Image 1 (cartoon, protein in one colour):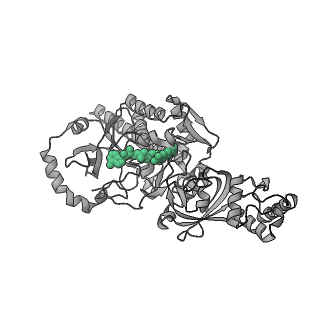
Image 2 (image 1 turned 120 degrees about the vertical axis):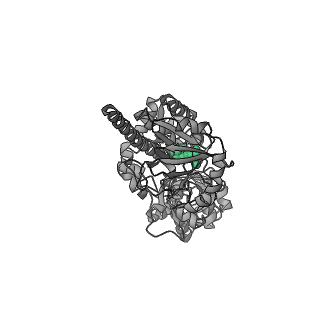
Image 3 (image 1 turned 180 degrees about the vertical axis):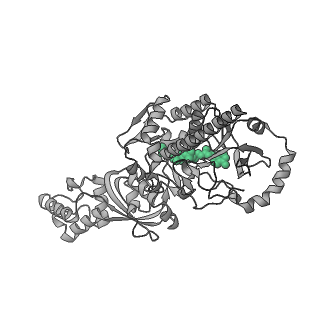
Length: 474
Ligand SMILES: Cc1cc2nc3c(=O)[nH]c(=O)nc-3n(C[C@H](O)[C@H](O)[C@H](O)COP(=O)(O)OP(=O)(O)OC[C@H]3O[C@@H](n4cnc5c(N)ncnc54)[C@H](O)[C@@H]3O)c2cc1C
């Protein structure tokens, strides 16, 4: 059976048919090379892990730890743990230390929030991840906002730790080669073709277990088959407003921001977020915006990243109170220019107050005494419902993920095994799971890799002990 799963790795049967005959000819003419020889000439069972990212390497280590006799081979088309290396601005935000409750933790995943409420994080959650790294020589620290980083503030500590542990356990790593296709054989094993995309030759491997941990990597376009197209998540908003651009660098500790898109359903309550926001040269960023981009990822994609953002800059003050605060201020500072003084209760910086005055149309030189009641009302309105046209998406350099991938309905989250094909496992971003910023995306990779590795390790140990018993009886 050809695996025709909802995953970019799998080759649609049609595509396979057009390519197989030529490939087979080339393959038989090509000398069997080193990788094939090394992995196929061994009696012990083999686990092939596709993708040497966080999920793949963590899963490989776990499987090999539980079942030392199992041969484990991780195939990576590029560099091992390359995203870990660049993550968190080079510091690697390993996980999040504030969510100890697994149900609350799952709420940080726009895709996966319902499904991950079960056993997933209970089996291996942030506390387990933190213990694992601490026990393996990477001391961690929890920052005020819950993000967890290595004490070294250097992602290389995490990369080195994982590669070192894989090496100690005897996990075999092969880089610079892609897994091109995989298919199941009648005996239940996997037939895997490995090679360089550019070359026309490939190597052939047989494995008992297959763990797909390919992240969000694009696969060759003519081979792509997807159940849900991956779209970007975790990005900033482009806002075309020259006056706003002048405020670049200003941050707000707490705003409420609501995203309105033509395509969004009215019941999408998560398109309202509260938290810090930052003005950048091209628009708006900060946790509130990143969370909106994650929850609205699919709708923003279909709206071509155009929509309306309504920001409440004083979420703890209602509009009537805001008006009376302004009236009080007018009485108290009637002889002062509006640009020079404003109510401190709003917690705003002077540059932003002037921006509000400009948008309202009040001259900066106006005296407070001359501000009409209408102007006071419009200023309150602007502070409570300031609208911005979102015209596109910007880049958030510290973290980026995609929404989409293998549907969770096809996976058992207790084992990470496919419900469609036995001994086939998935972990990490290849699944239709993505989290908001703050270490949640790596946590998905660690948890999934650990659960898959645990199950594969147990299966392999059980099989080898059964085989030993049978041989003993003969
Ligand atoms: C710039 C940046 C910063 C980030 N910072 C953070 C952060 O601080 N905290 C956080 O929680 N998350 C962060 N993320 C998100 C996080 O990196 C991912 O969620 C995580 O790496 C997913 O792990 P993974 O193992 O599933 O996939 P990946 O890390 O993407 O690994 C998949 C690997 O599979 C390989 N591969 C793909 N196809 C094949 C094939 N056919 N054959 C062989 N190999 C293949 C790829 O080359 C890749 O190395 C960041 C992401 C980016 C881009």
